[in-house]
Length: 119
Length: 114
Image (cartoon, rainbow over all chains, first blue to last red; front, side, top):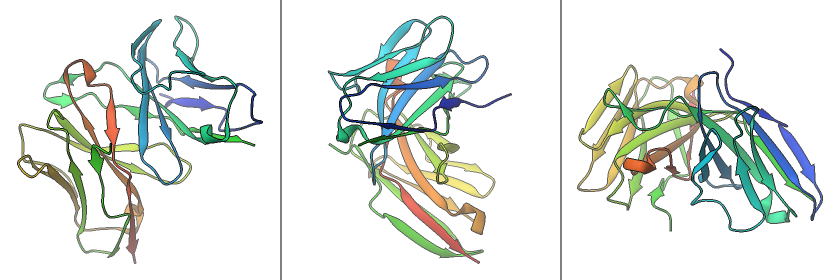
């Protein structure tokens, strides 16, 4: 069973360009989460999606950032008109469900991340 | 507003000894706590979790302790092995409709010396 796949692993964009980050969840997982890790910091929640629905986007910047998880295909995190401050590692995670099952919180499985560099 | 804090950026331990990683939180709505381990150029890997109704959870060499009154949790690794060298993140979830949203600490770099 393949793990969470993210591509590209490394992405270089010039200021003002668009960045598209892809995430394919583990087989059977319909819940996807995006996190951003700035240098020297922990991971920060951005958005939680289920197929064709955004469940929680409380961590998404209000402008330039959008996310989708279509019925078919990977989840996409899109950053328009990138700026240097967008340089970070972006991690995607997936889970089969969310919440508690048999007293245990459903684990989120993380992908290897996409390292975005804005020049 | 840093709701989950790991105040020690790094920890160095001798192989075979105990490693204790600490985490403090401020949000009393947190319902579940987790520890993740991360190697360079990889995503975080789940280690162990604990519900707010418990004060201890054990899994092999890893034990997590939760002190709700102090809003403090710790991860004990006994005995420590060189392969445990990694960055360890504490994370928390509010529960309810927010179970999917994890709030992470800044991480602690653990180095286990042979």
